[in-house]
Image 1 (tube, helix red, strand yellow):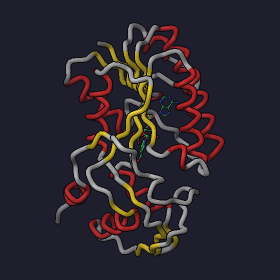
Image 2 (cartoon, helix red, strand yellow):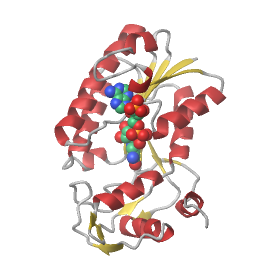
Image 3 (cartoon, helix red, strand yellow):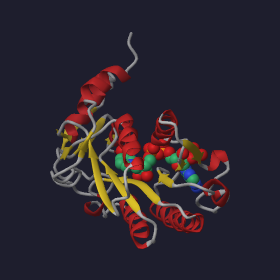
Length: 251
Ligand SMILES: NC(=O)c1ccc[n+]([C@@H]2O[C@H](COP(=O)([O-])OP(=O)(O)OC[C@H]3O[C@@H](n4cnc5c(N)ncnc54)[C@H](OP(=O)(O)O)[C@@H]3O)[C@@H](O)[C@H]2O)c1
């Protein structure tokens, strides 16, 4: 089966492309670096010829409010129109658990816009909403850093490693479209401040995490439901503790 991975050179995209090829599929890794640009439509029609499934794991190069909205709206329109023209049978897109609870953030308003375009199009779809990737924890720390202090909410999170996201996406690709949403999460619930504390400790990073129930997460106030999945998420097996000890250089 021919599958096009939009954003095939990204963190998730690269792993997904490798996994799908390993399973014997014909895979096109599509992104600006391979001549396919969803913001302009360049290369899309050629890439999508005879494709059965398209998986969109692209991300906006800029997270500034207007830029990110323009990215997901324009890309979504070009991509879904090209898929309709090519007769694609399943559109799979990667989004974020809790997106509708985080709309004080421009990034999450743009992800909602992306999801709405998919739901309004006629192409059978599955939206896969993941929790935060382990690989994103360093960026969360960075976004909350002021000098040597990292001010974070103690809200519950259930993060997942990117390898487990890529593996779950392979499964979704071979299943029938849900015309709905499936959630992905890691095996452990943990408080956000504590997650970042463990990450910094493992990396021997001297910054100090300050617990603050009012600290904003990319512009949004959090509670224990904001970032956690609903009743039946698919669970990736990899534990944060194992990943973090593997991912730091050994002396
Ligand atoms: N980070 C998290 O914790 C998290 C959690 C849940 C869901 N997600 C979602 O996961 C998705 C993938 O994230 P990621 O971290 O794997 O992304 P990433 O590593 O930043 O990769 C982004 C990909 O998008 C491609 N891209 C950029 N502009 C493009 C354009 N105009 N046309 C086509 N492709 C374009 C890039 O291609 P080039 O390399 O050629 O520039 C790259 O392949 C995102 O949609 C994000 O919302 C993230």
